Length: 302
Length: 264
Image 1: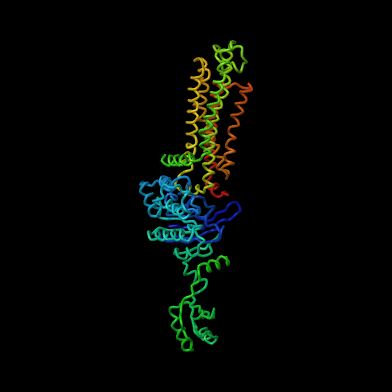
Image 2 (image 1 turned 45 degrees about the vertical axis):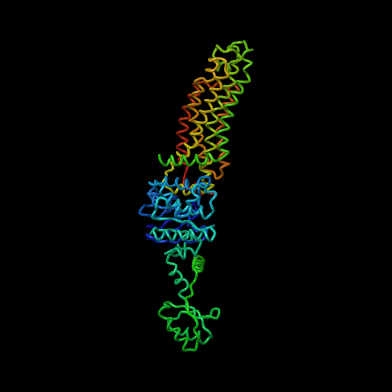
């Protein structure tokens, strides 16, 4: 769906995007993470044919950036960082303008469909300025979907929204995913990326890493299992550390935390060892690092 | 055409909700129509007392008067003609007021990026925005001149004087040069608003286009030049050329990337 090869963008001497290589598959929700000024919006602008790459190649939905820009604009939807609505015009008229510009055949039908789907039908005659932030964002999402694009670029879709509005927008992204649309999601919200994305890329002018959230956790921190013991002591830690498959065993807040490659295979043996050594095993669970920890580690390392 | 019409309707829907722009579109033509009519009305008594012929008045007056008019009528024709010239301000100022908001306004509300992300071409976008500014200006100019013509017909004492005021030179100026000036104004305003980030700066810079017109106005008032039919035709032809060049440059200067990435 999206194929990027050595994509580079310079503004004068300033290198905004440096040799980006990436592939986003059809139907995938792809998270594009990075700090402010990392070049995320520049990348999205290049992929939506708003600006031209300095060098490199990008193919979006089968069309080449810089050569087939009109076709790209026709086939993708873009939610910009700020809604950018016409505040004096009604919600309905805002959508009608874009339905006409995207050459939608059934303008009235499509506008009604998305206004109803996003719960804005009752407010359709109200000027956009009078809508809440969440409603404005939903209206902007509707605008990006009117022409039924198969690829959707969402730039910070939940930034500056209250938790309830953000939740509504996230739910809607989930619905779009079920419809099989490809979603390229730029976000600072790592929890959102963790829950919504099949794969994520961490980007800071150049690509730092790309993988599934689970794989990134494992690469960065390994898999960790927490054993809640009634009588944790140094002897028990030494027994577990001595097992050949254990990478690391240490006490954290009176709990035994063990790093393993394959907890499903090795947990029974660790439990057996602990019980034989006289430990009172109360509870066993996996320690899940947040994506934020992974992200911070990656960005610092880069 | 469909996209151009969409932009045109959108611009009007937005512009006609802006009180400042509405004020410019409505108040200025009314004011510029009222001034010459008030002059005509207030000078009515002088016509009856004047007895000398048009040949007795200064050269710059005589250029406006048929010999059948007396000095008082000739004076009145001259005075009113100065203000007919001011009708040219309408097609210059209204597009400037509308178009100054058209690009910069979209920049400040951040609505330009989603708009440029649609399959609309630069020519379609600029044509829609230009027509949205030019059409009201031309209509307002024509309407103002029509009101002026009716008012003149009601106020002047004879047909010769009426034809002297509404002569072909001014009809040519209002009907042909007016739209050309409107187009010049809008292309200039779009060029300015493509390059600046503040609508107020755009509006202030856009009104610079009125300066050459004021130079002509004061030149005529001072007797340095006489705006006759030939000069109007020359100005019209020059404007065709200038408009073509300005249209080309306004499209060339509207660089999507620069506009998007230089936002403050």
